[in-house]
Image 1 (spheres, rainbow, N blue to C red):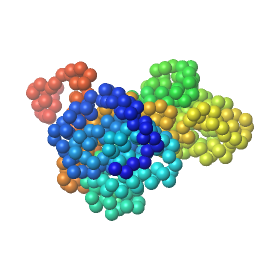
Image 2: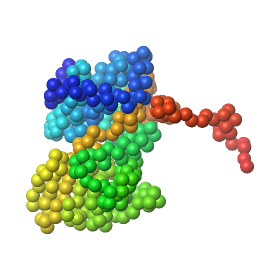
Image 3: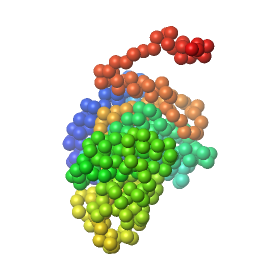
Image 4: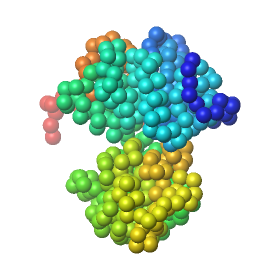
Length: 417
């Protein structure tokens, strides 16, 4: 099996960390056991463009248990854990991922996965699917379907579908409640601050944190920042989300005003050029800027470079830009995902649900037998609820059930006051 990883000697410690993550992923473990018996993915090739982490390794093991032949490349140049990549290579997976790989290597690795001719693809940002649609449309003829993990990727795929150009069905894993309500909120909230603190040792309490975007990821970052003592300002363009942030107790204002007040700026919008020249010029000396949106486009680094007279690496993944006016701005992880570049990403207990969605989406696509149209689908609600039920069971939590009378009442219109 061909591979491209940094250091194969890291396979043993990588395996130990993969097994550690597995302790906190009971839902995926139950799915893996069922997959071993039923083999729903037998004979299928699955190509993945995902963050190469311990939790992703557990997903790959579940897919293999289901009978799939799996290949993997990184969905972000700075998120790869080289020991995990080495361990997966040692276990016979086709892995193409090196931490810190440049743009040409990143896309060469994507082509290596596509060279396996996958029938199901799994994306974290839609780079596999977009590459197929831009340059390798012939491959789409054999693709049963795809899955997408992120808000950013779903936005790209829905745009493709709206234009009538999507070539095969895609499951928007990110739109499952057991993904976005937990992974985006609790996972991003905790792991973003974890990455920032590891990189800077910043005391969050007493600082002014500016959160750009109040979607589920922004909610999580704001909630966790407030919880450890930050004064949180939210910047938002959607009036409904801005109103929600205000009702949740946060100060809401345009970024041009927040830029003067913030000590720490975190982007979680999924959009381009969120923090640009006017904000940089208004920031305090020593302001810290980080991104937890999928792509490194939210912070205008080229614009910041043009405003600066020098840039220096002051710590690992911390770049200090000295503006021409003498003030300094610190940028973390080159504007890439701070939670994965400076820390380990989401806790395994959260990714347990996200990757349960991925595994069951692959099964759903495989069992669809070509009946699905080329559009973006949500995973059926029944599967979403099954994942939640498995998670509750693993935590020893019991809930009530509707009585037959209650079910009849909820499904009827006759009963009134």
